[in-house]
Length: 524
Image (cartoon, rainbow, N blue to C red; front, side, top):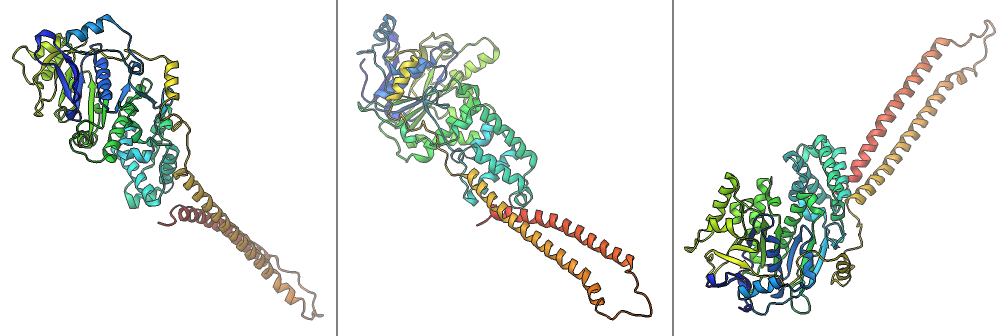
C-alpha cells in the first residue's frame, strides 16, 4: 500500500489482516499512547510516527532519553530485514531518508539551549519542581504576589532568592498582610533552590527565553521540523524533566489560538517516560494535566504519551487518548497479570484473537494497535507489524550533530546568555538608596548630639563666669568651689551622654529600618 495524503501508514499484518493500520491526520490531535516493556520497540515506533508526521508537514517535538532518536537527522542504512518487513506489510515506495531536525538541550551541550523565566513557569509548577510542602508553596505564592504588586520581574534564581530574602527581612509586616510567612519555610525553599541549581536549573531559568514559534517551523521542502530535546542528562533530575515538559505543554495551551478540528495538527508532542509526570504529583497538578490534555487538542496540538505500562497514566487522561499502540507487556507476577488484563480492557474487542494473549505474546516490532475510524470511534484492536523507519536507527555521530546545529534555522539565537534588569538588581538599588537615606539620618542624629553636648558644656561654665564679676569680699577669704555639686553635675552629664548614646543606637536602627522599608515599599 502507498501512503495516503490524509493518513499515516503505521503497519499491517500481512495476509492475516484485512486492513492496514493508519492514523488519520484529521485525528492526529486526538492524542495517543505508545506503551510496552523495555526493549519491545517503543522508541522505533515513536521515531516512525515522528517521521511520518514530519513528512505530512506537521512539526514534531520529542525527547531523546538515550540518544537513540538523534539518528533521524541522517538517512537509514539499507538492510534486507527492513525491506522484507516493508514488503510483508504492503508498504510501497519504501526508501531511506533523513528528517529535518533541530537539536535542543536543556544544558546547551548537545543542542541549542532551552530557557524560560521563573515568572513563566509560575508558582504551581515551580513548587512541583522543588517538591515543596503546602506551607512552602504558600510562601512561593506570596513571593509571586509581591513581585507582581511591586513590579519586580522574577527571571532567574537570583531574583527569586533576593525576593525570599526580602520576605525574611520583613516577615512580620508581610505576614500581617498575606498570611504567615515563617523563617523555616523560607530557609527550606532556599536549600531546595540550591539543590535545583546543582542539577543545572540555573541555565534553564535565564534569558533569552524560548519562543514557541521555533517549535512550529516548517522546512523549505514543506516537511515539519522535528525538534529533538537531548534528555539523557536531564533524566538525572526526573522532577525537573517532567515539570519542564508540562510547562512546555502549558505554554502551548496558553499561547496558541483555538482552531477547532484542523485537517492536520499544527504540532505533535511526544512525552517519553510519561510516568515521571504523574508519580507523586499533587491533585492540583494532575487536574492541570487533565485540563491541558482535554483542551489543547482544540489548539491543534496532539500529545502522545510514551511509557512502559498504561497504568502509569491516570484513567482521566487515558480516556482521552484516541490512538493506542501497545507493545508487549510481561506478566511474570500477579500484579503484572492484573496490569495486562486492565490494558486489554481498554481496547475494542476483536473476535479473531484474545487481546490479553496478544499483548503478552507480540514480538519486537509488533504491537496491538487501535486508531480512530473515520467516524471518530475507536477502531477494533489489531495485531500489527510496525513499519520500518526511513532514517537511521540509533544515535548520530557528534561531529554530524555539530554541523547540523551550525546550519540550524535557530543557530546563534539562544546561545548567548542575557542578564536583564530584574528583581535582584531592583531590590539591590532600593536597598542601596535606603542605606544612603539611613546614613544621612545617622549623620543628622550625630550632629544633633554634638550640638546638645556643646550646649551642655556652655551651661556648665556659665554660672562661675557670672560670679567672677561680683566685687570680692574683704572680710572673709573666698571659698573654694564645692566638689559635690560638680560631681553631681558630672554624673548628670555622663548619664545624659549615655542616654543619648543609647538613643542614637536606637534611633539609628529605627532610621535604618524606616529607610530600607521606605525604599523597598516605595510606590505601593
